Amino acid sequence: MEYHIVKYSGPFGFIKPWTAVRDSETFSQQFLTPSIVAGIERKLFPELLNEPFGIYKIKSHRLSYDRMDGQQEQIQPRGWNKSKNTYSRDYAILVRSVLLNPVLWLAFENEKDAERANRQHICLCRNEDILYPTLENIEQVSSEDFISNDELFNGFELVFEKNEKSFLVGYNRFENGSPMHGWLRVVGNPINTLQ
Image 1 (cartoon, helix red, strand yellow):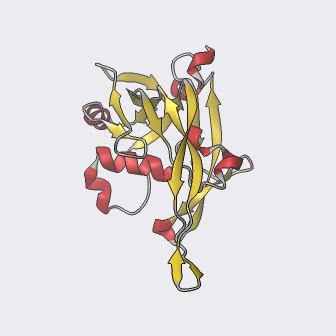
Image 2: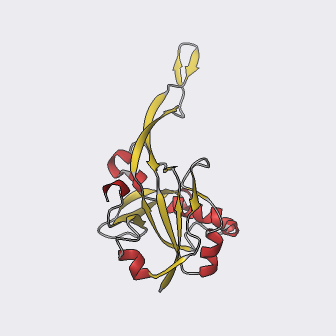
């Protein structure tokens, strides 16, 4: 099978972990969850917005970066505390990381889908963290090359399937909170500054 590859890059990117607590166990900011990939796909192809949750056009992906920089974020929990005659909400500080100089490869089976994607920007999670396409011409490679070529397509890829290597990566709110699983494929050296 042939893949048509689009490359995106930018100065920084933010990947929101599926929960702040679990991220300390899964280190989820180094990979894209099914919901993030589905969101990117719907940004590129808005006609998919009415389709049931799933990934239709992006067949594979790869994410690498230079390093992660921890950023503090102030949050408030949803609940209220009552003391005497007042209600209050406490504040807490979370540390989430920004990826510096992320590179994201998206693989499509359909060349027209890849050409359309190559004319648009994407957001990893927040609208201000924009990545732009960086290839004038779309690369065409075999799916085997994309999966295994550690010189051209190094990075992390969360493979969206459940097997003995899988771990929990979130809950799908579009399917009654059903668990989402995946396993991490590491190709080459995903941290670009170590090359």
